[in-house]
Image (tube, rainbow, N blue to C red; front, side, top):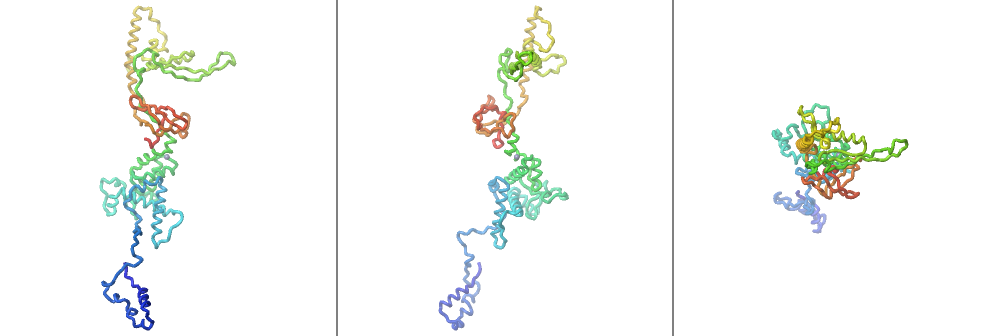
Length: 455
Ligand SMILES: [Zn+2]
């Protein structure tokens, strides 16, 4: 507010009164001004100038560029660091251009403006995350022993940004790499910064990403936060997906109960092998496959194709099915052959004992002994989960997955959505029905790779 002496009003008054120039000379108003002017200043009628009168719609001029109590919503609003910095830079430019005495900034953002925007964002982050440390440093107090910033000996630079003091003062490094700007580990700004740097370095690993970030910034708990952020990177996941590995399941009844050999079998095929019809020249060649019948109780292998395969079979059936014992007096081991002929196939044949009167009895005793050994050695060995011991994540309907395909690059693995899961009696999902662009398939869980955002 200021006092205005309205000359124009005085002229208007004189003109309206119809005064001639000669009479004006004798007019008190002309020579001495309005009567109130000769009175004491406290008596003056003071009104606001028209320029300073309040306009109801006008907003108060808020010219403070640094907002101290910024909520993280500002940082959550943008998906990339560059966008966040550019928006901040345009806000700062608007504030600058709103000041009447400043030269206006126009055109593309300059590097100075980008730097200023970055610094102002860092100040906001620090104000929300390290408010007590900032207050203490502003009051020239030392930080408390409990402060997690203490090992970094932080200090405030001339822009009031919290920087790492550290021990590299004498290192031949740029100022920003010696005294990095401090950042909290769990702030959206830090996350955007890590994602930006990881993507700028063409998806390099956590070590390189962190080293690059530390040229300017020092995120607390950096190693972990960088590793966690990169683990969620979809591009990295697509190029190196990890499949689900459910815990090893319980054995089916057929494998753990005593039964006759080949009462329960599993069948597998191998091949094709190309076999000639005869030994003569130009004889026809046929494709042949080997059927392997595996006895589920003894894991015994047999087939009836060729002499060679029979030889292989005998070797397979002579392999020990239990771990060899450490007892120096125990010279034998249990093999599938024991269940068929009572000995290993690869041994030299023993003379028959059938002619001997007691042989039948002793043979049954041996069978009985074998059964006991099967229960004691083999069955207990199955008790252990030799692999896939840790429970992995269970897929659930609606999950987005990659379906592993052999001999195909992970980037070409088809995408799918889990329609249905088929958990076992232990509640672990080992099979799931997946919908892909090519149709609906049933796949085992260890062919599926769960996207990081689903984990
Ligand atoms: Zn990546």
